[in-house]
Amino acid sequence: MNHNIANIRSEYTQKGLQESDLHANPFIQFNKWFTETLESGLDEPNAMLLGTIHQGFPASRIVLLKDLDHGFKFFTNYTSSKGQDIAKNENVSLTFFWKELERQVRILGTAEKTSATESDEYFASRPRGSQIGAWTSHQSQFIAGREVLEAEQKKLEIEFEGVVVPRPPHWGGYRVIPNYIEFWQGRPSRLHDRLAYTLEEDGSWKIGRLSP
Image (cartoon, rainbow, N blue to C red):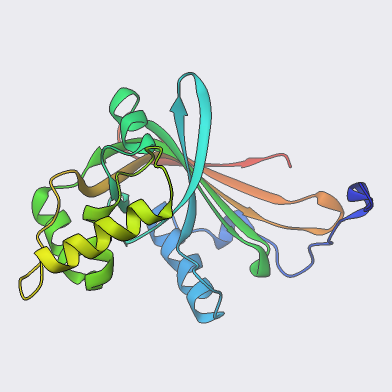
């Protein structure tokens, strides 16, 4: 390669993260950081790396966080590669990386489908083009070319003309219920702050510091 990748580095100097900074509830702490990310004006701060197990190998892709209650919610095609992975193994990971704030959040947990009502409500809020797109795409399947998608899209636009686009039965939400949430703040000399919440058997959260 023409570039020396080994020399690419940044020094993290913005902030620190102490135990005293953390709320006892990791969801409230996440909301605090997420609010600060929104206020910073970052593009798509809700982008998160979803990790599943695919045929024995880790598989990762970016999805978008769409809600947070007692879990982290996203929506997709249930017949997609990730949907099939989750059907076989509900254990997943999520990672948020907010480079401009020198922050990362790692989450381990289990994924479960949201209710049909939740999926219906979110689907109804999507732009019409995205609604039709959910019917158009047989996600993760090989196709002969883009013209296949475009032809199917045009056909469906005619089919749904003048009517409300219903939610496809193969499309809906997942909620990731965490059992581990780690907050990472970049620090100088790679001595980063890593504070983790681990779910205890009684439902409480234990907070501990990890060596960087």
